[in-house]
Length: 135
Image 1 (tube, rainbow, N blue to C red):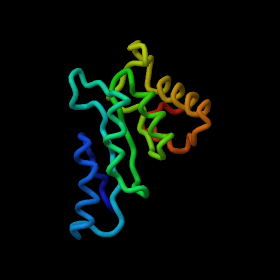
Image 2 (cartoon, one colour):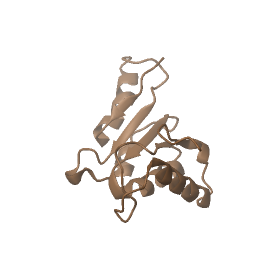
Image 3 (cartoon, helix red, strand yellow):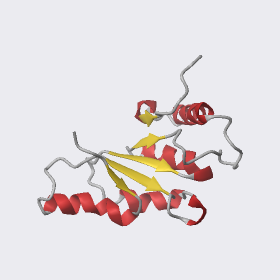
Image 4 (cartoon, rainbow, N blue to C red):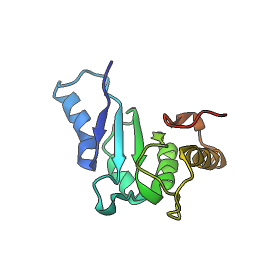
């Protein structure tokens, strides 16, 4: 089993391609988890920071994004539009776009799922490991 590469800065997104070219990793690139906003002031993600992360990835790269704070959902929606997967319900975003706390992770997941459906995006790309089970 290949472990995912966790990248916390855009400069890290080029590394797998460089390693592959140098024969440090085999032909198939590992799955990448891009972490947007973790090491910024106030741990806030910004939609403008997504493109520099994604640009160096090969077109066939398998990647997912987790984002921090109030911009989480806008970043995740853009991720799905760009062909990536997203992680929601993670402990990095407790608030909605207006900085109002979610009542629970299920509310965040449901809101994002509805937004992705409105975008006509593929909601099967949603990864919600902490979503509450339906009662």
